[in-house]
Image (cartoon, rainbow, N blue to C red; front, side, top):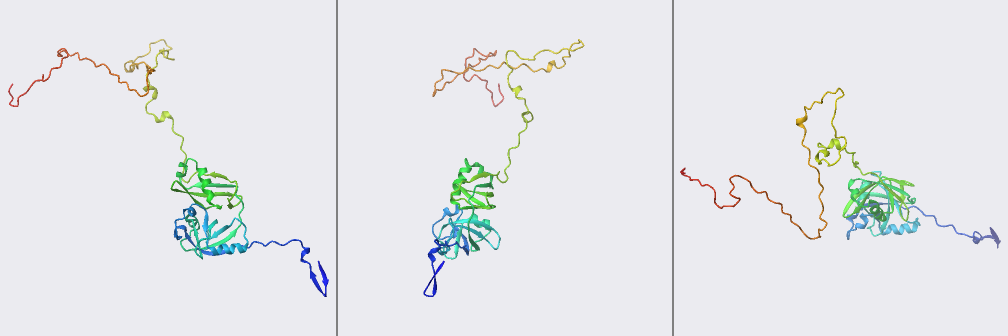
Length: 309
């Protein structure tokens, strides 16, 4: 749409009725990476416990001009090793030209102090499922491992399949491998409803089914119990079909019958906090040389070293 006026065309910009929004442009920079322990100032354990990094202030200015999508997620790549991972950003307070990464993230990228890392802004799908495998069976000692993991994942912005993340609980660090993520190999876990599953830890073996009690016990427990009193089934004598008497060659080896088992009677008058001592009667000696059972001191016989009587 245009109109004529004084020999020239005057375009009416208001005929469009809308303005095209500014398209986001990608962020792509190379920085020197360092572990959080190399960062000047106080110890930043909050960075070590999560999946976010610290970037320089100039990166924030550039990201603002590029109009990237939020939340800010980045893809980290090492050209030397060919390893990649994804992360979020925690603060923009690093020195210029440097980024500070958690130690577990540097291990995944196989990077050393001062190595170069390529950073690129990305948009990841919201995660719906993740499966983890502990690298040590000690992780099973935690009372509620799922709740501990969900609490630690609050410090993460995204997950990448194949990464080995570090989870700290009770002053101990547990390593977990990300086996599977849905709907992609890298997902965003910010404000999402995600299902979590665990695979058996590395080197974990379930208890093998135990042997039968008959094979484990050398002594039959029935032999240790006293014989019951009263009626006993199948206690009879055997007879031969030919009418002859049964041989009793083993009659001498028959064990003596066990005493009848008598169950004790509990003391129903027992009071809590009291002790009762029961004295058993002492058997009196009935020897022939015993003089009425009276005690006589120094009544023994003496001997001389010279051999005299």
